[in-house]
Image (cartoon, rainbow, N blue to C red):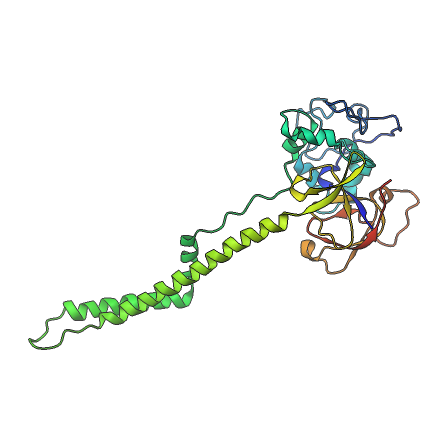
Length: 317
């Protein structure tokens, strides 16, 4: 059982035209995998915050849409935007991906070179990895711990007690033979207790911060199944690029936003991502705008990162 998913950040195209089986995209390495004239002779339907002075037909600009433009597709979910981009096929053309074969392996091997569509793809859209959150320093955690109301009260009480004790000891004349007052010891004891509490609490929090960072790193160190050059393969989640076609199976934690390509009876749990408690049935992107499509509910082809596949199966053509 598997579901075919195209990375949503890669499926946006404001133009659409009819294509034939002879259409191809020619990469710099000679690989042909998808329509090559997708930027030159398709009508303009949608212009999401299009940069001024940029010709979307410019062959030197292989990916016409910015990350912000792609974000308009899913934030919030919008069928109108999807339609404006030319539907599923229009998005695929703008991202230079063949929905039946996925991205070219030869293209992706150019990650290590200084040119080529893959390098431009990563440069334009970035990697599938959030910036690492820098853990708080132990001094920052100590300061946060010290902000607790009880500790503030103890700190004030300790300072007052210490000040009064020192005054009683050194600021007041004592009769010869009288024992020297040591009331300042109480203040020192209170302040020492506050210091101990702050040190222990901040150290524990610091250990938790480090453990949390390691846990996040381990969580992202997993593999997902993608379709590249017509073959199924496993890649690390951080190596998934915009335009990749993913396979999803029941139980999978979805690593990217995307558009559902094909399959049936696919349901996702988006409670952790959107707060929606009910399972959501997904509609293949190609059927959303089909004239014979009948449904009592609005179709939902959008796949949300962080959600989980509950059920469904599909086969890649």
